[in-house]
Image (cartoon, rainbow, N blue to C red; front, side, top):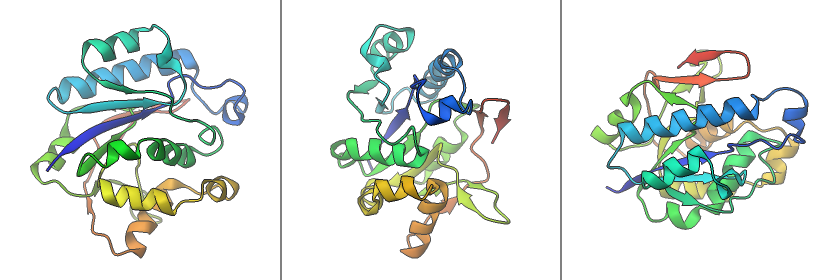
Length: 213
């Protein structure tokens, strides 16, 4: 079964975006460091995998340490990813980027979706998938209101394509829909099988702290 690792990123944030103006986002200087470390780690742990990066900030159009690393390590760079909605709703930004990459999704049976601001501690999650390829997720708040973590998960490409084709991005933004909730509801409402792993084994960074999940 074929698969690829698809890295979706917004390396450089528009400082005029609503979230940035509300001081809800990490500074661009810190983001660049986090992205470089995250990309290096996923490549180090998965040297033989097909890896693609689709950045929607145009950061990769100019020389940088990240661009140099991508080129030197044969990570495929996808250009011109749109970013009309990600500055309003994170999930809408993911969907917009996935739609931009429909032709790529169709080439593989499974997609390992990874947002490389996360830093892999080890290859626990991806190795588990490779031992038995399937729709694989972890849960956030597993007792009260369970929803998927979307920083790293694996999914059959045809399921992902069908899902994103159901989404009206304007509605997603206008109603502040959470992709973590929406995606798990899509699986449940359509009786699509999925498996839950106990942890991702990654470091997750927000503006104020580092978390291990």
